[in-house]
Image 1 (cartoon, one colour):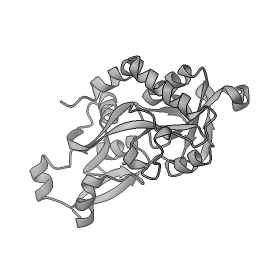
Image 2: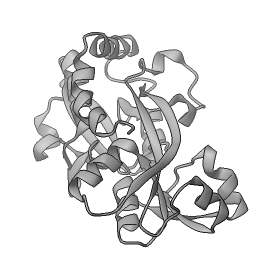
Image 3: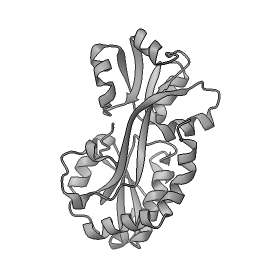
Image 4: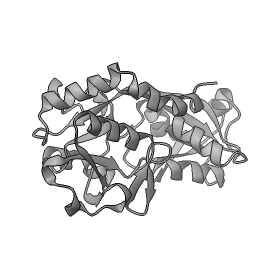
Length: 253
């Protein structure tokens, strides 16, 4: 699974110029380029909406701050956080950043991220066919690791084919370029809604983790205030209301 990292390509909501937002009023969120719908909707290098963006805006409102979305290459998010070029990054599992042990730098869990193994028209019909056949091409986001699939990749039963983001994984599957893919269940649901005839289906779960926000070591808002705002967002039920429509679409059948 991902460690979403970064190089700075700044994008304010609705294309506002960075200078228009007083720096002391800004809360800087990194947005990894590997996110796609329904988490992040982009127009070019501008972030314009999505589930993750709604979450970030709600968190910024809890702190009476103006959200600034910084679109970053996934391989550089860690560096941007450690250099305090951004204030926080959401959504992240603790197992994806084992080097960060300070409890104060992690928010409470915000949601669960469930990755699934997706089959296209040319893929195996079921688990038994997957085990019998192969090698199968597996589309996955570049630099993402999936521990439950590593043995099959090492043995050559799965041949990895890298994609830039999760949406691209599904596009490859729909075009028949690969037999299998790994994406978030909500991303699969969004793709199936837009492309109902693509012939994609979930074969089984791959990973299910609690997702948090990870704070920079020295953010512009004190760590305690960031952590308290995330707790309020969860305890108030507002976060559940934001997530509910997408969660229903991505629910396990």
